[in-house]
Length: 364
Figure (tube, rainbow, N blue to C red):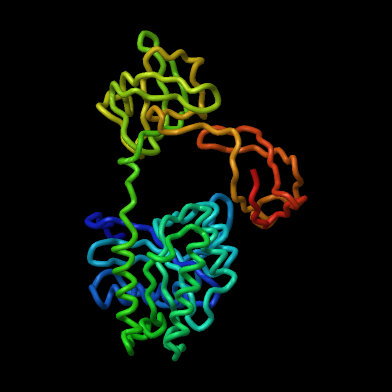
C-alpha cells in the first residue's frame, strides 16, 4: 500500500486525552474517529482495540506506550495521542514526546474527579499544555441532573486550582460508548462527541507556526573563511534570518550583538534561512574564538540565558537504560542543551533526601 500524501489544506493541531484510569479515554478516542468519519465523512474510524493495544515507542531512550490516531473536523486536522497507563502519561508529558496544543480531560460523571484527574491537570500545567477541554463521560449512568452539575463544578474548581480558566472551560457531557456504538439517546452519544470536536475547533487557537516565531538557531559548528569572516552553522529552530538582520549570540559567555552579512545553504547564497533548514550564517566582525558550539543565534532580546532553574524530572529506571542506584542532594549530572553539554548540580526539594530510578521529582 503506497503512503497517501499528507494533505496540508487545513491547519494541523496536536491533542490528546488525559484523565483517570477507566474513565473512558480510549473509548472517547475511538468515538472521535468514528463520529468525524460518520458526520463529516473525514478520515477513517479506529476501533477500540486498535487504540488500546498501544505500541511501545522509544522516545529519547524511554519506552512509552502511546497510540496515535487522526481525525478531521471540517476546519482542522487533529493528531491525537492516547496512553494506556498512568506512567506512560507522566513520561510522555515530561519528555515532550507528544507535545499537545490542547488536551481533552475525560472525567467520569459517575465517579467525579479522581487522583489521576488532578495529577494530569497538574502535569498539563507543569509542562505547558495551553488549553484543556473537558468531556464528562458515562453521563448515561447518572440519572440525577444535580449530580452532573456537582461534578461539573468540581472539575471547574480543580482546573482553577491549577491556573486553568475553570469558569470558561468548555465542558461537554455525554457517553463515549454510546457514540462509539452509533447511538444518540438524549443527544448523549454522537451529538455530544460532535459538540466536543466543535469545542476543540472553537476553544483551542491555532498554534503559532515555528516560522512565525522569533528567529533562533543553535550553533553546531564555527568556521572562519579568509577574507569573509566567521560562519556559524546549524539548523534553524524557529523564525527566519535575512541578510542584514541584527542577531545576538547567547549562552555560555556574555551575550554579544552582531549582524548577519550572508546566509548560505549547500554553498549557495540565499536571501534568508527559514525554520527547519540547515544553514551557515556569516557574522560581521565576529572572531572565530568569540563563538562556540552550544551557543545560540537569536533575535536580540528574545531569549535570556539562565544558570538556575526549576524543573520537573522523570528519572529513567534501570530497565529503560537509566541508573540502577538512587542519587542524593548535591548530585552533579551532565546537562545536554541543544548542541552542548555542561555539568550542573541538583538541589532536591525540602524533605526529599534521595531520588530513585523511576521517580518523578521537582528539583532546581
